Length: 312
Image 1 (tube, rainbow, N blue to C red):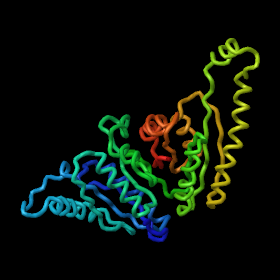
Image 2 (image 1 turned 90 degrees about the vertical axis):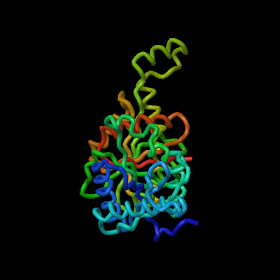
Image 3 (image 1 turned 90 degrees about the horizontal axis):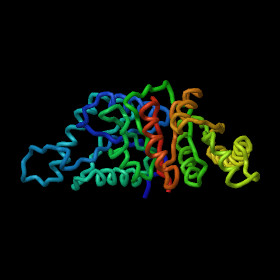
């Protein structure tokens, strides 16, 4: 059974053994803002496995207890240095399997069981952030989590407050469902949303080639874009109704661009001075874009938190 909304918590995917101070610093900065604005407590959660802890304890003690004891002590040592209002003692989950997916599943299951408001996780890569998600714990967590995941860039510039988030959508049913969760995330923050959709411009050769193949009944580029714009206005209205019902102010930005999705989103985020961006990761044509290249692009180039929900 999930906890009631009054007992919801912000879960922090915490690793006391990670040695990147920027990751820790930026995660803490965001967590402070989230806790202050929502009034929710922050619960650090560490999933410990045999591969991560070099246990030097009495071997008459069961392995699970040894792992938990070492991890708990390390968590307490690190958290003692970064205390802030709303920060709870760490929860240590023991996963006996060495596989990364097992640890991610354990954290995702705990988040679902406790009805977490969001799962905050810091991301980092060895060469910039080009492959920050690929093959990482963050990507595995995104795949399994049924709660929103908030990804924090090592180069995050924490705003004074979280007042405005942009939600990038392809207007699919899955994106619409994720937008409902996104509004539930924004409501306690008292933040507003901008619904953003970008239509890639056709390649210059597309219209002449289509006309040649299919005849004069085909639309030219201008006609095509006008038709798409009309359809998208209708689709956007459904999202606005959902935001209004949730009590979240929402404006709509529909654009065409010859840039890739991530670049277009980042340009609009910068222009609007948004404090964060939301994405729905789902199966279908956009899965690779949103969970892969677009997420990586936003994390690599952007300096804001990225909210992601894997929509079913």
